[in-house]
Image (cartoon, rainbow, N blue to C red):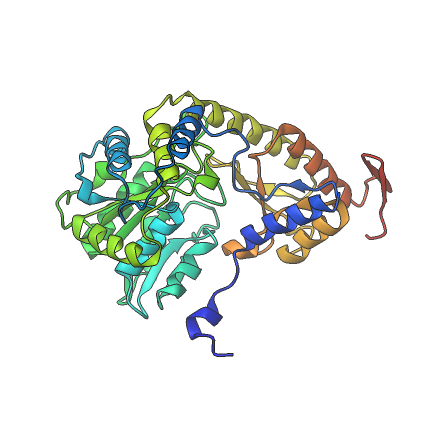
Length: 405
């Protein structure tokens, strides 16, 4: 079969595959607890649902401009002014089928074959695959001190003659680490000095804890003209619990956005008219739901961290934001894929292997579900892994007996 070199190099999304696996097991009646998910369980804003229903009821659902409808672009412009203190024109904005597509078309507009995209590790699973789709190379940067918080020196050491862009995701999927203002200031200054594109993946920037405030990268930019290579990515999926609506956006210089629009126009055309209307309503409507979600997630995080600390040998860094915890399980199994499969097979708990994010021996555990999911899931994991645990465990009416260890 004649599959392209790029096609053969791209692996499936492990997170999407696990979602599928969990759904199949649930259909079979297995009592699965999904601690690997990446979507909040709260409902989408009522304003968004009403707006989508209104357009559906009209029956007038047509093609949209490749870069998004004017109403959505205006909402994004207002959002950019509020959170980035940056007034932009419609030509600086593109709306896409999710923040993932915004990143993808940005990389296709920026990267040439063999050029490099730099990103801190652990990293979102799609970054290296996206670089491959462009014929380029993803370069992961591990913090020299072994933490989840890189320094500018760590980035500088990996930048070479082929480096074209840096992408920063803060707070980070999958560690929950929110990078410091000093690091953001340093990376903006460094990329401007080296004439590199800097893509700020800010999809979680309002889901932060312990009194933290979103960091505005534009505060540290010296070049605020149309030659700036700073690109902001965001969307409605996480903060508004609208993952299935698939609306994201990018804000950048007009030339880059023009090229991204050309690519997207041939790739998928404009995003769905119905879903864009929903996104407009979410952005322009009541914002109390974002704070409610943030508060719920912070409480969930605290419960999860307390439960994980009851394990002997699990090391955990308290997440600053997002809804993920990246815990070190190397004392139990250094092979995170095998460990994740073991927990799914033995106690029906879904986790994500850390190797997929560039760090072996870790598991990504999500806390965006219910408190019951978190406590029951961790209880099952502890029973499966703790050699001193009782020999039996009841899950509903099912009796599990340990036949391992």
